Length: 252
Image 1 (tube, rainbow, N blue to C red):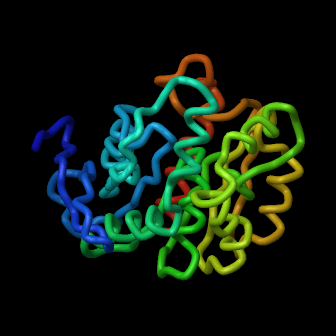
Image 2: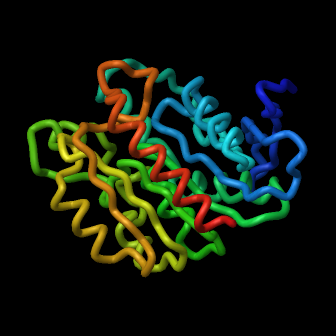
């Protein structure tokens, strides 16, 4: 357990619904046990140093944050190439990952609850908000559908997914979004080569009242300041301001 600038952080072990020990990282504002709580659905890299920095950022803003390691069951090493990343998505039990997010959220008692996710996690954030009593949901550049065929890059990603299992057989986030009852903030980049703006507009059309879609002049993963090839500082600053404002309005 540690404390940084009024933030208390710790690593915990939770019991998942399938009996697995589920590691998670928690960051909370000091002295605010009843503050609203937010579960973070990670990128393909799991609970990375950047995801932990997101938890700390939320805690500094007065929210309790928890990030579960949804890839704990995957024993395959993660490579540095697109094919390896998409293979990991293909191996992921999506419904179990969503249950892991809900288990993590339920571990922080009291206050209103919300979800936020990035890339793969953005899609999982939408799935976690469906059929649950959340007060807010943030989706940062999550695929509305698990695959698209709008470019050579996307076709490569689809071929990397196994024919069965994982995301291939899971419910599309856009379908789950139709059942969400809380406001959703959807953050996307207009230059994202993997998620066309047309797909974002399809998602906008099914989001519940009070939701918002925010488009930024950036590509994919532009919020991640630990990936300099993706990060767009000015657009990330704007997006984070909108995210924090959205949580403050809906979790007060």
